[in-house]
Image (cartoon, rainbow, N blue to C red; front, side, top):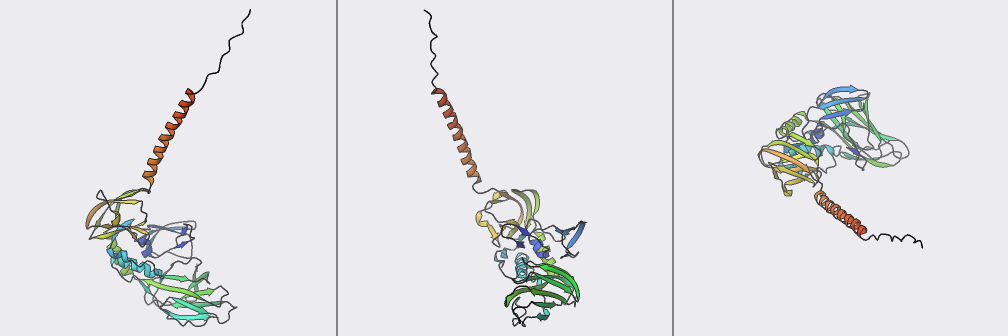
Length: 344
């Protein structure tokens, strides 16, 4: 998702796999660039420019996944392979995304690409370095399906997507993200035009257009639903619930990993060795087969020690102040009173 590197992020309509990974139950869309369709979302209401949706395939804050999630390839450059690998490692459902073949490419002031069109990243060279340039990819799905797009290039600010000759949508890619293109019918040519704004003679463009395999997605969802956590109590620093693991698994959470989280299963504190960092970012817990009660408790590291030190410091300060006040009272010398003058 788009971020500005100072802990500020923007959610744009993503894939249902992503929404499932992070437990997104409700979405609010305020742009016409993307239209959420009823295959994965239920529209709740519309107000001014905002449309609220409910995610039909939401998973809770925590749910059981296969132990192989520890080997999730989260650092791949292709965001679709990252999400697909997550679903396969978590549930066993493989190949949820399929890269759609590029059926045609047209060039404007660009030399023809020499790379394999399946690689995803292309290097371009302008025919005339001082003129504008663009490339148009045509993707034709072989079956009716939901399609997603990811385009990245330092020399591109905005792309356009059209259904045949009719303008469809545009996407700014200053901060690239997966673009929800919607559902396209089988045999429909979809054209994605990528204009190169820079004055460079050459550059690169990363281009992935992929379709989601509904059967695989629903298979993964159903498997992960079986081990979901039922929350019984929730606040910012203490979460309680129950879950049932089919085997020795990992309880995956969308909670950001922090060593200050303490986890208790059936009243027993989980050892640090059984708490893992999923994808080097998210909190996971090793769990055994069966039904369990669980509690997540957040206690900032050093908080107890800091409170004790602060309490001792306050007590010392109080005794010191009282001692100084008492000392000041006892050391105070009263002023001499002179005898009144005597009359002869």
